[in-house]
Image 1 (tube, rainbow, N blue to C red):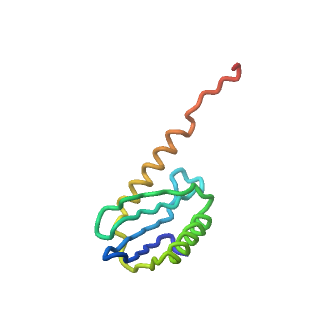
Image 2: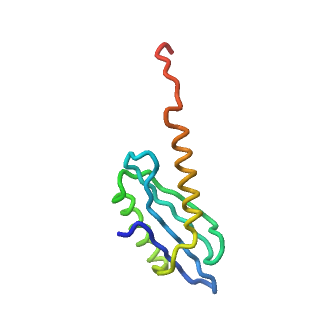
Length: 113
């Protein structure tokens, strides 16, 4: 299974596009995420969603495969075009990594309480 996938579907003259990418999270701890951007082809994505974290790329790729199968049933076909929302996906990855790093070690240990 590839680590990225682009799917499209034509409906009422519009082309709906979904780009999904499996990416490693920062920290080198073996955690991965799946980020999907969706919207009308040729425009900005109208939705960006992330799933995970997953322990290893194979788990995330399995989720991606399941999503692709589900979307195929809904009429989406694999698209051979280059990803157009890569910057949006990278921005979401930076946001996720930033949120994760701000919560790591953000606690106080008070055994007397």
